[in-house]
Structure formats: C-alpha cells, structure tokens
Length: 630
Image (cartoon, rainbow, N blue to C red):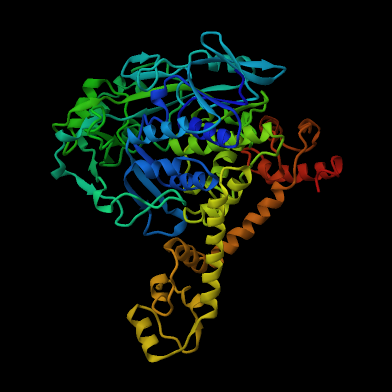
C-alpha cells in the first residue's frame, strides 16, 4: 500500500509530523520500532521550561498537539520567571510519564488518514536524488511522496555506563543500525552526538525533611489556548529541591577515570550538550562552585502503574559513572542517604544529520522529498523536537499540494529562531533553545503566541473554523479594551488621588486617560478596575496590559524586525555561483556554498560571513540578477 507521507519515528517530533500531515488530509503512515514507546519521555518527565514553554504555546497556536496533551497529563504547572518581564516568562509542567504517551497514542489512533506500523526502517527508496519511500529491515518497500525522518537518539544508539557500551536504545530496544550509513551513502554528512539521563529513585526512601518543597502555581494555567484547565490547584504534586555536597564532588573527582565521558571509554566521538551537562562536567567545569542544585521530580501518580508510580527523577544529576559509583554519589546528598536506585543513569551516543544540509522548510537539500525533524537535526529537548515535527509535517504536506512552504521568521516565532539557527549556523553540540537566542524576544512571548501564529495554523488547515472565530473574537476584544481605556478619563478628585497615593503612585493634577495611567510601572490592571468595570477574560486583560506597558519597547522591536525583513525579502537565486563573486573572503565563500542561504538576511547570520561580504554580494546580485534582487 502506498502513502502520501511516511513519518519514521514515534517520538515527539514524529507525533506532531504525523498528526499535522494526516489532519491536512494526506494519507500518512507512522513507522515506529515499538508502539509502546510512542511519545515516550526517556529523560525529564516535564514539558516546557525557559523558552521551551513558549515553543509549546506556538505549537498549540499552529494547531499542534503537545500543549493539549500536556494539559491532559500534567501533575504540576508553574509560570517560570513570573517576577520578571513578560519576554522571559514561560510555562513548565510536570507531565505524568504514563498518561502523556497514553493520551498521545490515543489521539494518533483516532486520527483520520493516519496508520501506525511497528517496524525498523533500514533504507530509503531513492530515484534520481528524489525520495520515493522507505525500505524496512525485512526488505519490504513502502512508497510515498515524502518521507519525514524523526529518529531521535535511535540511529546507531549506544548506551554507555562506565567502561561498558551496549548497542541499544534508552529502554534496551533494538536501535536503527543501518539507516544513517545509507544516508551517508546518499551524500549526507552524518555526525555523532551524545546526551544522558540521571537515576530514578524510590520516592519512599527519601528523607523529605532535608529537602525544600517546590509547589505548582496557585492559579490555573494551561498551554492550550482552546482548553480550560481541568486540574485542581490544591491537588498538584510538589517537586523537591536538594543540593550536591562536597562529598559528592570528591566522589566524582576520585572516579572521573571510570566515567564513560572521562576515560571509561576511549572510543567516544559524540559531543555532549553544553547547556544540560552531566554532573561530571559541572564539577570539572565549575570547580569553584560548592554545590549544584538538583530537583526531585515525580514521574507518575497512577497507582495502577507499578513501573513509575514510586519513581523520582533527579533532574541535574545526569552521569555515565559505573553503578557502584552512582550509589555513592546519590547517597552523598542530604535527604538521599538511604535512597533506593530503581534505574541507574546512563549516557547515550547516536548519529545525527548535520543541520545545514536542510532548507528552512526542513526539506533536505541533497535528497528531494526528504524532511528531518528533532534530534536527528542535532537538537535536544522534547519541545524543540515537537516544533520541528509540526513544521516538517506541514511543509511535506504543502509540497505535495504544490504550495509554498511555511517559513516562520525570527521575529514571528521561537520555532523560527530554532530552525534558522540550525540551518544557517549549524551546531557544535546538541542545540537547546534559550531566550537569549531570540533577538526579538519581547514580541515572541508566551501570552501572544496565538496572535502571532494562529492565522498560519488556520491557513494550512490545522485550526478549524470554530477555533479561528474564537481567535478573531479575542483580537476584537483586545482592540475594544484598548479603545475603552483610551477614551475613559479620570480627573484629579480627592478620592482618586487618595487611591493613587495609597497604591504607591503619585497624584494627578490634570485629567488622564486610563490608557496612560496604566503605563505607570507601579500600577496594573487590577488598579485600573478600580475606576472602570472590565468584564473580560483574564487573557484579554493580560494582553492589553502588556501591550500598553511595553508599547515603546514593542514598537522599537517591531521597527528593528522590519529592517531584518527587508534583507529577508532580498532573495538569492538558487543557481548562484559564489566563486564568481569577486572580493568576498574565502571563508565566506565556503560558508555560503555550504549553507546556500535563501536570502541576504539569512546569509548575514552565517558564522564567518561579515557585513562587508553581504554588501559585496548585494551589489553582485543587483548587477547579475536585476529582476530577482528587487
């Protein structure tokens, strides 16, 4: 049986890719090695976090599933950086490790146009550099118009502990042993990366009196713009904070040669994550730090599940030490002296595709109709994977339909920043999204993801008419409240000035609109409600308050983005020969040839390409391609 789109891999990228293509009415096949591992959380049992939480909101705004599924399965949720400005605020939820994949599998199985098959993909069907389907381990060929690879950490996966190396996946599964070699055969550059995970311990063996409780927020929150929160605030399960000790650090230093990363194995070539290092890395790189914080996070609250209901994940304690050393390390932490380890930590090394070989659409430059998403592109994290999977599924569908791809710009979405960074700059280690990577983060906020992206979701067919109308209604209400505040004025009456002074503000001498009053840093929307009845949803009022308070900064960010967009609109012809562009530095020519940027804006962001090179290139394009460089 033939399909329009085949998705290889059932992780977070694969789920979003398969759902988006199927929901866009394309016959889709999801191929996974083990159906029980679909949407698995082999590492941290959480969704969201700094920058990542904004990605989840963007996925939801576009019509993806991660936010909806996280809301269904959360056991705790909080808004990070709530005391700081809106640009760095992001949701983070503890997700139930059993409920999350169960709910996602249920969604996949009940989606029209989507089938799931258990199998290992060994090769691609390739004709004249065009992908026409896949070849399974048993030799079976399945044809399709596009293939999306979302293989996660399963390409030639090796589990490493101490001086041992085992060719297997995170749960002991059989990995994909031949696909990456075959991709290399087709001309793709394959790299080796690594990551790791910490121990899981028995929650009943922890001395919680020596830990600090970390509760969820005392207000209802959700990732999805369309679903109302259904959990009870008081029933959220707390996490707990502990710290490493000097004894922990001594154990690590004394046994560094036993760690897979530091001498236990001499054949490791993979590069580990810079922003989520192992505890060995932390102790070596930050030798002056007396301690490192660790979070004890529950994995599941389901009593019927014996595998996870009593397990606690030690976030921040990833290691590849031998088991006996891990025992000493865990027991050196206050509160964990008698902790029972249920699953030991390990490192995993795997193959990935160097990401500059992709277009901004996530289609491969060498093999047409091949899309890649997730850790195969050199990223880390469930959220980065899901965002890529969604875009890959959308763009594979649009290609089949003969339409232009959906390319999110850096000023439109963190997903746009992520993909542009991968395609334009490449990677040295597993890529992790950070708010500092987004130069327009003030306009890429958690609160306005739907205002930025819902239109795109509707246009590609992932947002239905009802949700779209609700979105339009929200936009109108925001305009309505802003107009109301602009047209409502207060005068310097005694009771008004008394109220302002009582709320740490200054009195007024002339009449002032509530719009301008709200610009005062010491006042908020609750203060404005003292002067006017505002019967609107909190999300509407939150949006209005941010727009008014940060109006000047937002306008500046938009103006800066417009300058960038002008360069993005200056397209570079696909057939350009950079060797013919005189006076550009040799390194710049090499990088331009490698990345093949689609615009001058993208070219400017390539490491090794300077503004002077862009100026020369712009002049060359104007002269040689006068009709295309306007």
